Image 1 (tube, one colour):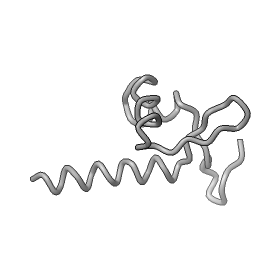
Image 2: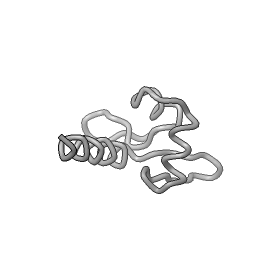
Image 3: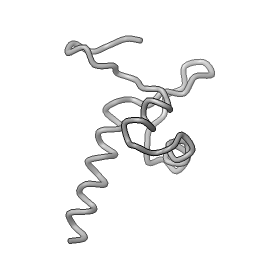
Image 4: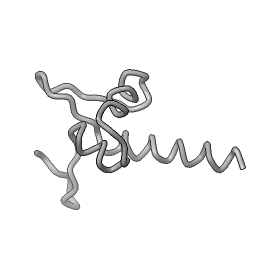
Length: 68
């Protein structure tokens, strides 16, 4: 898989995203279906851009701070 300059992956698999978020694969599929996480298809493979995952986490962090 291709990496950016600092050695991090640019795209993650569904199981990798689930592991990073601490949720199940089904939850990740639900987030992509709802449009909350961007998904890139390469052939039949679904990949999540790391930038999309980071933006999603930042968004939910902002929501939790706002609710306080």
